[in-house]
Image (cartoon, rainbow, N blue to C red; front, side, top):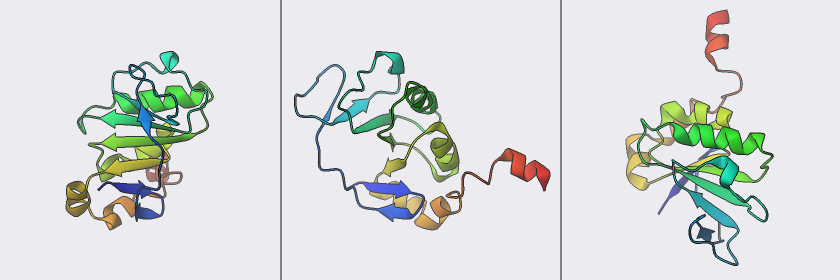
Length: 133
C-alpha cells in the first residue's frame, strides 16, 4: 500500500481512478502514468486529472524537469511524484510543481513523517533564505 506525502504529512491514497500511459491509453482513465524519459510536450493533457511521474532512482532528477515543463504548458491538475523520492528532495519536488509524492511503506519506515514535514515549508526554506541568515 502506498503512502502519499503532502505538506500536511503522510496520508492514504485517495485516488480512485485508473491510470493509463501514453503508449496504452484507456478510454475511462483520468490518470496518466509517465516514465522518467517522457517529453512533456508530447503529453495530451485534456481530461487528465492526475499525472504520476516515475522516479526509478533518487539520483534520477528528470521527473522534476517533466513536472516543471507540464506546469509551464498550463497543466493545473494534480501532479504526483512516484517511486524513489527521498525526504531531502521534497522541497525540490514541490518547487518543480508536484502536489504530492507517492512512496512505499518501506521508505516511509526508513524516512518517517517528521523528516518529510521538516521540509514541508518549502516556499520559505530555500538556499536564498539560508544565505540571508
